[in-house]
Image 1 (cartoon, rainbow, N blue to C red):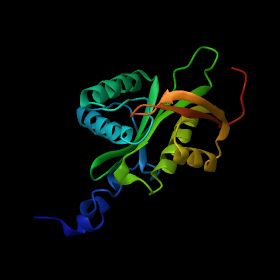
Image 2 (image 1 turned 120 degrees about the vertical axis):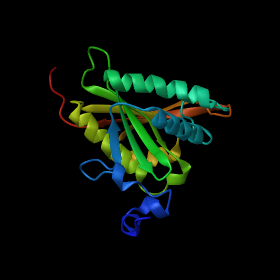
Image 3 (image 1 turned 180 degrees about the horizontal axis):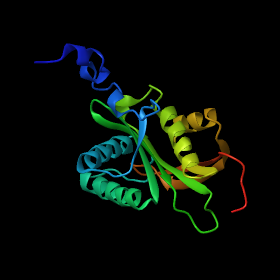
Length: 201
């Protein structure tokens, strides 16, 4: 028999695009960190990447095959296990609908820094504050990892507005820095955010 009480308290039971409360972290955030990535999550991450490449410059060209997307995420998964990267995800009834990464492994003279990379939100989950939640969770994770400086780059106007609203400092743009997924050069803008006082290390 179905459990009407359980379904009435689970938004995902009625709306597959509702964020999954069962996947929230211990602090109640819709974003959680993965320390390993299983086969189902790899498939969902590949689907998310393919969806995002359809409309944004995120390092890949069209057409992006499932096999290519899976190879990319398998490499990320290997870095997650080794501790070189932190991978954060948000989920709804359809699976993983948002993600962001922190590249933690840096050169010897930059142990305090991390790169924020591949912040992706599926088209089905946009305009619901998920980008903000991912950014804040990434910053919190970076602090937990002892990082005091974050750096990112973007070619998306919507992302620029989000970063500036969250207190990131715009450094400037480089014209013709990357290709759009369908071809043609685009500018890329660089940002940084200080998370705390820099100390001698």
